Length: 320
Image (tube, rainbow, N blue to C red; front, side, top):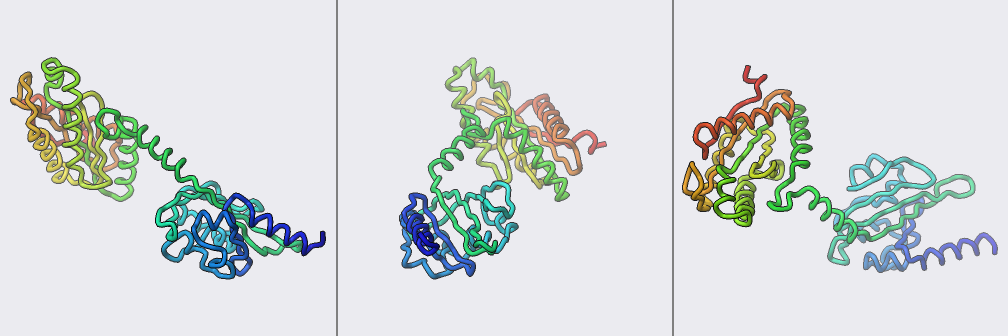
């Protein structure tokens, strides 16, 4: 078989691969768009071969595909454009990435694992780039669901303690960098042991769920985080919130819990379930632990003052 025969054989082999594959030449024009790629995208080879607009098979607006970035050795753009990625660098093996793709012809998104590698001629000149694609939407969605479950408290659906601890440190570092305050609320259901004793643990669980919903309804936006801290205690992280904003959020939560009007004959504060809220604001480089201690101290003050109320403080070293 001569050189031309080898080339035809290679093209034919690529056309019939079960892996969705396309190849662009050194000018960025599509040379090969195999049958598996047609099935994946809903776009025919006749629409793609010879053109440079292969992006439209995957996206609803012009943007480079991974093969284009490998062709131009534009690795910094890969890190900006692709959601999940491994180590990048120009090598004989190319690069791998993952990303949500719009898939306009199909009408629904797919999460694709993408590999792109350069092809050289005998003189070492880059002549083409091959890109292969795998639909891993099901696996990726399942992974996201598992991660979400691992991050959530099983009873209330709020973030769990492990996530709270990590997010508080992240929020603290970000607020210090941006020179913004960080607010924290510690919320405790008043006389909850008495509620469980009077109504049973099943009703107690339902009470916890309702209180969690009330707390979550007071979030300002996606940067706030509500968590079940432990038992009947909850926490709320408020990045960038001033003392006035933090105090207002604490009072709204107190009112939201009280407005649930859950009967509580064992309460010493009200005829209904109520909550005490300790609020703290750090405006400097206080450690996350200091902020938690300050909010806990404020919560203790609220309970000593009669419960069903709010107290606001700052970390000890900032108050000095």
